[in-house]
Image 1 (tube, rainbow, N blue to C red):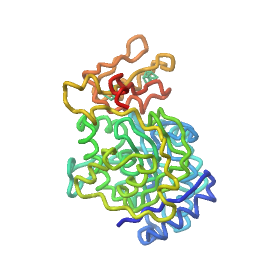
Image 2 (image 1 turned 90 degrees about the vertical axis):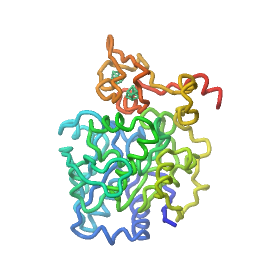
Image 3 (image 1 turned 30 degrees about the vertical axis):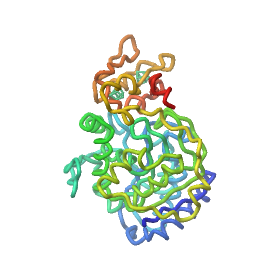
Image 4 (image 1 turned 180 degrees about the vertical axis):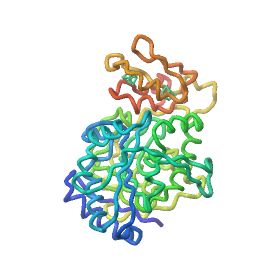
Length: 368
Ligand code: SF4
Ligand code: SF4
């Protein structure tokens, strides 16, 4: 059994979050590894430049409470994440400013990784990639703490602790990843290697206000009131997914973890899952390919990206980020070659104007 601390928390007040984290960290013996002077990499989910109230990114109050505890312990803290797409110092500074991380760094003394520098590392017992290119700041850390956001996801159904670690792959390299592992199952298996390499000392998920519907960027905030902490990201994700009414079989990263014997049985400490679960949580539009894989049905059942022309400003970010090279901008509007689309939904994730949604075929709607 692997402990997952599940706390009720209905506010983004740092002073209320701090004792909940402290209690979990003490219970999990995390301070044995978080020794004075240890270099700790804090990895929030900073998918894109967006106000924290939109529930697209980890709320800064959760990161701040964690950084204060680490600072009190005498750890040397760096906050780092990279969105998909091009990376440079100015892009990263803007990301940290808009997501509230710049303020966290100022108030807690944490550093921000504004370099996005990368290094190559080796993964022991890899299932897909023996070599990874990751953020240098992560490779140089003594401990990594993942601070994810509870959200739905168009590709992987759910994002919490394990999927958050994909952000350790810098910027545009994420696009290569999607191209190389173009179906959701192999992509999810590749995420096992990232989690295996990172070995996060702690995984925390901000489920105080989650995102439902067209996550990870186009959905709506939904209050769940949950803060989750574990030293095992897979165990945490079992509990996180069940809070939003997703079973292990419905989450490809959990299916992959189970396949490779990485999925422990979680023991929930604190609140019960039933007391915080949201049974009518709206899931991401499902990709029928997960349900029906026969090519004959493919055209009928596969969801696909669709643009809302009124919201599109023709910036071209989607086309530049598309691993399948399936988007052409014509007259400042993206056009999709669905034959080349691998349904990774990077375009939806990265569109700064939430102009791309996931369209579910009429046939699949009939099945619901
Ligand atoms: S859909 Fe979004 S990312 Fe693509 S061109 Fe329009 S505004 Fe830019
Ligand atoms: S069109 Fe969108 S969903 Fe399709 S491959 Fe390109 S980025 Fe991925």
